[in-house]
Length: 281
Figure 1 (cartoon, rainbow, N blue to C red):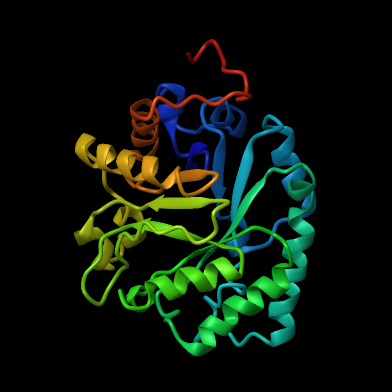
Figure 2: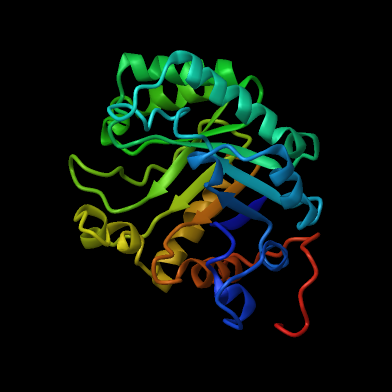
């Protein structure tokens, strides 16, 4: 099975034929079967918020939720956080996702680690502790430091993640020898292969000026690039039960058009999508 989604749901007017600037969750769920939300990274929502999301989507729609920043150690070097605070974040996260788990609507929890989270013994141990804290919840890990992808050690990393039942996130982003990560299309946990496509805007990605967050994903994938992704995705579909592709290249509003183009290129259709508003389609 191959699924496609986007980061957030509001900022993709192409999904409603550019009829309005903001897209509602029901409108999004009428076109795509999954969405990635970063809300929990900044603050863990109440369970009632999650239930409200569920009320707006069909029963087989799924969510990818980012782990909270305390769970990924983004706070290191900033505010002092106690071990108890970190454990509390895991506890509150469990409580928050319960409605999704019960309804089989949680595709995975995305642990996107900071660039300073390097491949060290301590951080390998943290992955083990994450699995212990998360119990049997689905987990996907995205590394942002190239130390994780030493060619001599990549096979060992995949085996380690497989042993922890963690999905390896395949990342497409600008990268240099010692900055950014390469595109490594390797599957760790056969239940899910997850691709996150950030674009290839090297100038915007590596030069962190005042507008960096607004331009770093300013990129539109070409037809040839999408065709190459389609080939890789087809190969991964033979190795994993599901291949999910998330487009994050949206500084210029290109994520949705690219996602729809890839959908058509792969001849995908999904049953059980939400009803489309006839005024928009």
